[in-house]
Every structure is written in structure tokens, then in C-alpha cells.
Image 1 (cartoon, rainbow, N blue to C red):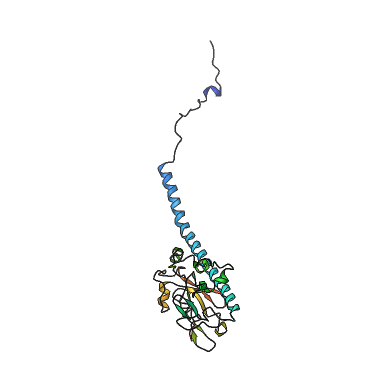
Image 2 (image 1 turned 90 degrees about the vertical axis):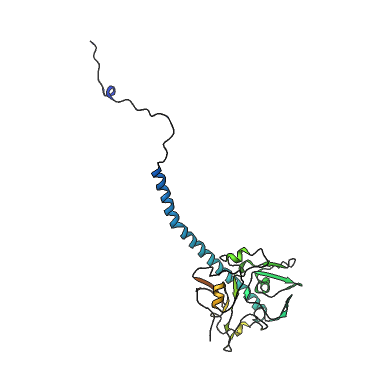
Length: 253
């Protein structure tokens, strides 16, 4: 009689062979969990990214204003301290003292002469090569990157301004004057500005701010501050400040 020898191998279960088929996918619960996690991360990151973008545009705006100050310093140096508009400027609307209220990024050349407006008057100091073969163009640094109304209109001759010229500064004579030529009055000499650090040269403009200052701006201007709770202001000493919304930065007597 033959005997069967029992060994661990003879009693070990045979390996289970899984039937070949489609790989196992995610369950509905797993998919919903992943979607929920992505939603939570998006809710956290989107506002952060938006704030970073807004901060970057605000910084770019401030940098642009400082470059305007450098260009203005070049003009003032070559004109014995006088600001653009100290002499009558001739264009298709007449021959008189007037730089307007706003600092549009668009410049014009008429009859071979740079017309009134900060962009035109400072064009030689923004760029060494003036495109005399054209009669108009834009100065990019006078376009605030956060101002969508301006950026969307750069390709049009009806360019929406981002900035307004200072409305009043305190003079050494103890009076308040517009620093730049307006409605027949010539621009000041910088020596006549009592406290350059407090004297507003240029500032972010929007409909709400213009109303606060008792003036008007372009009908297509941004309705509120493009920088949220603050506005950038350039002063005559060259520094830029973020002024709280609702605050008038101009000097008073």
C-alpha cells in the first residue's frame, strides 16, 4: 500500500488567478473627494493670486509715475526751472497757455510741433527718438496697467487718461496755484513751489475721485479707484505715495 507524504507544499492553497479585464477605476466617492479638495484649494488660491496681481499692477503704476518725474526733471533742467506750459503752445485749437486737466498717454504732433498735453511736451525726455514721421502715438508709462479703461483704449485716438495733473500747490508767495498751465494761466517755475514734497504733480484719476475734488474727468474713466482702497499720487519731489481712498492729497492754506 502506497502512502502519500504530506508536506507544507501539498496543503498550501493554489494561487488565485485573477481574471483579466479592465483595470479598477476610481469609485464615485473617491472622485467626489478629489473634486472637493480641488475646490477648496481653488477657493484659497484664487483670491491670493488676484491680490498678488493687483499689488504687482499697483507697483508698476508707481514705477511709471517715478519715470514721469524723471522725464519732467529733464524738461525743467533745460527750461530754467519752468514746467511744461510756461510758454504758449500752438495747436489746431489755438495758441495759448493750457495743458488741460488730464495727462493722457496719447501725444500729437501738428505742423511739426509737439502739441499741448504732458505726453507731447515730455516726449523728448521719454524717448531719444521722436517719431516725427507720425502725428500721434502713446507713451506707455502714462498708461496705468490696472486701468482697464485706459488699456482698452490705447489703440484709439480717444484714449482714456489714467492720470490727472495736480490741481493746486502752495506757492512761496503763500497762495494756491495750479502748477501746470490751465485756461490761459501759464505754468509755474518749480522755484515757486513752496514744499515740493507736499505738492501734487500727478495722481490716479477716476470718476469718484474727480467728484471728490470738485472736477470732472473722461466720461469713459473708471468709476472707482483702480487700486482698490488707495490711489497712487506723484509729488514734485519725485516720491509716490499710496493715498487712502476718499482722501484729497492736495495742499490747503
